[in-house]
Length: 265
Image 1 (cartoon, rainbow, N blue to C red):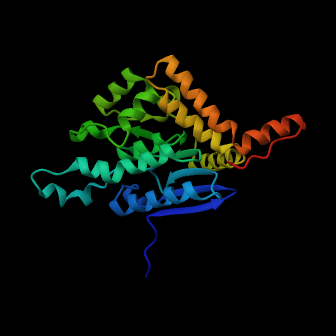
Image 2 (image 1 turned 45 degrees about the horizontal axis):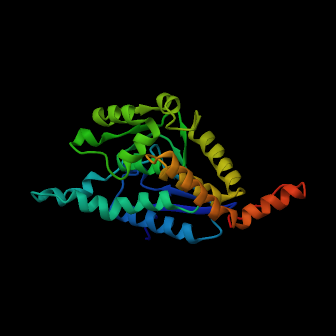
Image 3 (image 1 turned 90 degrees about the vertical axis):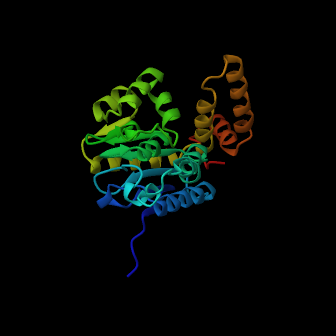
């Protein structure tokens, strides 16, 4: 009997839906799941048929982060090498999401904790349900935020609020997630949220997705720069986008008084 995949994926209307598939374990992240997810993301980046990525979890959680049971062998040693685990297996996931050439949406129900929190934050926007919660639980196990959480939390919440939640490990519920700008759209049930998130992903897939990825890159890179350096980054982005087929199509469509047909090129 062939076991079911740890990560399910399907393409519809140029939207790649990726579903973490360990519902009985609240989609805890094992080595095998991480490797499978990374390969799917790398393949999506190169696949012209994929224009938008929608990331979610099966069952009642997005992901509770690292599967602690899998780490039992590591903790039999006196000095577990957590740094290598983060560098070799978690950081490539976040780097791939943040560098992805297509826009990304996280659909979150239930907890997104630890590394699961980082996966959700690394997506461009978050669509959540009333049951969604974001949990920077690192401090509760005597660790600091990793997998990009320190970077992404501080940019999502601001330095002071991010520090407060990281030091306490407090759960951020759906109300605060919306009020603080951590989430962008909220719906009562997963079924409703999934319909809305899929519709939004399909809408994005019809847009200038290369420009959308460039916008993400620009907003990530200008943080902490001087205004002069930010202006230079913007000019470089326009250098790249001004030569794209999508920009030329938008100009032509405007002159011809019709809607543009974008291809992500």
